[in-house]
Image 1 (cartoon, helix red, strand yellow):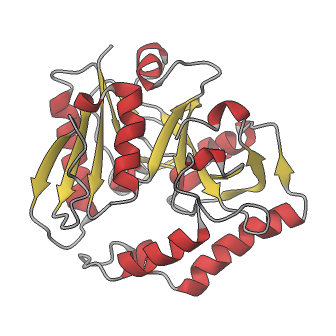
Image 2 (spheres, one colour):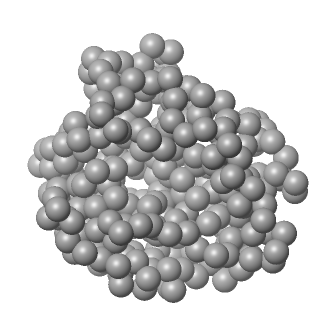
Image 3 (tube, helix red, strand yellow):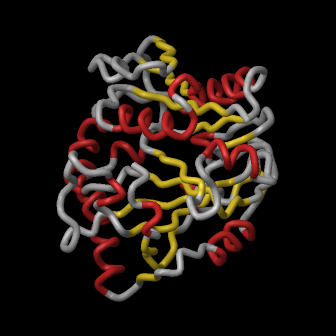
Length: 284
């Protein structure tokens, strides 16, 4: 089974090397493709056999981005059996209790174009220290939070049309409960605050990038919400998302772009934090 991964980057000096190291260990560096949207920080240098596709810097436009993802994914399937499409801060994990790696998942999953189980990696500030760059990220963080917005259509063995942000697609929604998309935006409080300042200064086309331009007060509220869940005992060790998946499936509608969408009328997060299984801790 041959499989590739596509991501997008602009001055991603923190995430991109980690993305390449992780997905390279899963799929092989030569099977990774990075659309470099005008980086100026040398972050796409030194990635070994990773395929870098350089394009001019233009205002961020999610329609252009997702069109590229759709066409590039379809084109690469002329040569590969399957492909993943993710952002540089999104790390897909095929449950290590059931799969060797993402290539094994791509071969054995019975679903051709699934939705992943979307999880926000959380920094619980009063019990977890600031990120230490000498250690793996998952060795320093124990808690995740289900988020329907992160349940992306990020893998397919056939050409499909991805919707904006990979939140939707033209394929009926079928969840793969063994595929987790771990989103690292909030893995560290200090990193998120600095990152928010950086992304707020980017140029955007139209209304794109609203989430990347929110205030420091908004970011503080996100982390306060993580802390509050732990403080009030809203924590589970079951690592079971059956209820959340069923809720997503109950919200599926066809959106104006003729895509299957369970966030059209508003997304949601779970009430409980979940504790990551120990088998995840050394992955990245």
